[in-house]
Length: 357
Image (cartoon, rainbow, N blue to C red; front, side, top):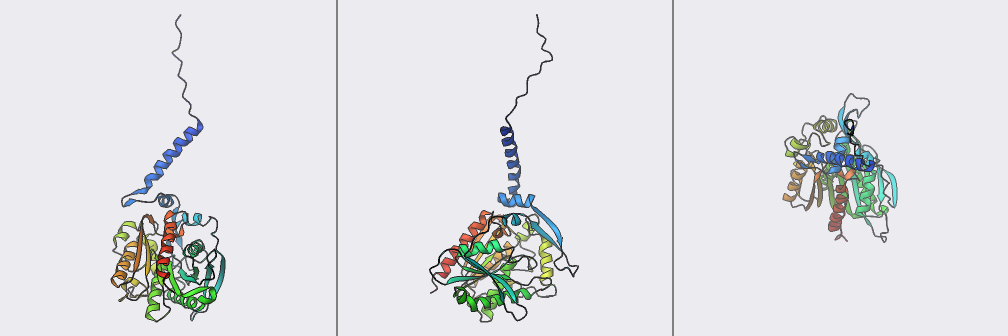
């Protein structure tokens, strides 16, 4: 007798759920990893993920009494990074610095650990944010980490923001903070001979400008300046980094132009040295500089031009470009480049401050 098997179908092979999950995850990883390949080279995986999944732009009104708006780029990787456990320092104190135009608020951090009662370096830190956004609170994780990495007292400055307080308000506040730091260094447990200015992005601009102003006005003698991806040229339009990285990498042309409209709305000469330090006629006599830049950052071209001018003027410069990451990386604890940048900062300060007795 013939067997009737014409309607029989072979059973489908069943894969364990864990196998299916592994396959799905592998495909997802391969898909997202492909985002690191750009027309301008390889981008760090974490940065690529944040740009694709966590970035957006919203219409920001910095002054509620004005119709002025800025297309503000937002990357939630910064907020997620700030959810990490707070880095412990030995002490934190909020202070108010009397100024000629306005009092300046600041937050002082002392590094953790014992320091054998030796006076510590004092770093006056100016936060980024395009001169329009940012605060001591927002940059608290970075300034805590900087204090510990540098084994220094860090004074984080709450300078006035544009457009409510356009240029030169931020410059004046930055200089007020430096004068206060020199005057109070000893009472804070710091060494006034080891006074440093530092900042990121717009804050890097303020740090560079403050160093110039201190030299020009016979102000505090600075031992060093630390510039993280600084905005050194507010006229910038024709750098290759702007052509390549102004769209899709976090800091857009619209945002930069909006920041500049808010900060210097009625200034005819953006080549003023206290606006664009790149155009200072003479850079001689400035303190040694550490300049960190990012590969995928429209500000890098101008920062590198400033590096070259400093070197031409005989200023010692330590430069490090993190070629695979984006603007703002020092504010993201999840980025390995932030850890490397802090280590580079510590080495730089050790190199330039250790000989000061």
